[in-house]
Length: 199
Image (cartoon, rainbow, N blue to C red; front, side, top):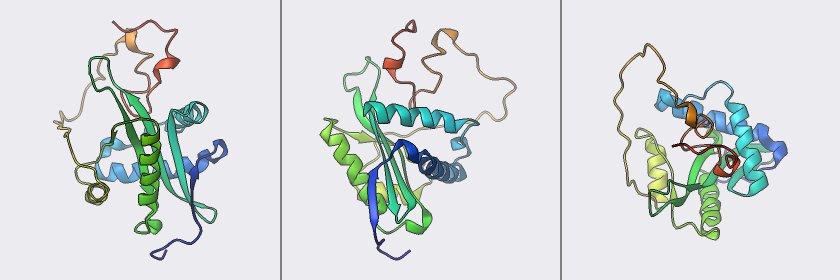
């Protein structure tokens, strides 16, 4: 594509456009997994993503935005409101779950437009900050977010143990609460009201 995309349109995703979201989300994580294999998507990821999209569309708890050129989806932004543990004083922020632009549309300002819309969404809802994860080797993303006013404030350090002989033990008292993980695309707390709290 040229340096400008004619007829570029950014709009919130509709329930009938799950196919477009899944295609871009899968491409994003295929790229992420090429930088860090631990970002590979699990079997059945489509179902988890569909549940998340249904939740955000019905509650407004998050924003899923698609960029279109003609009738082709070329960009995706997913952003959610995040509430951390009551242990912390500053518990709430907006979190970018996904930002991706198809390779043939990169460098045309699509990512800028998507992120600007996400920042506006977060400000309108009263969030004082917005956060995301970036793989250390993703130089292009690091340059982009720096240009957009972001700065690194934490690092994730990892030590690999190599192959494992068994899976870590589950805590059955917390199985429901952590069924979808700690952070990205988690089960939302108001879905768990009827469950016993973890001790």
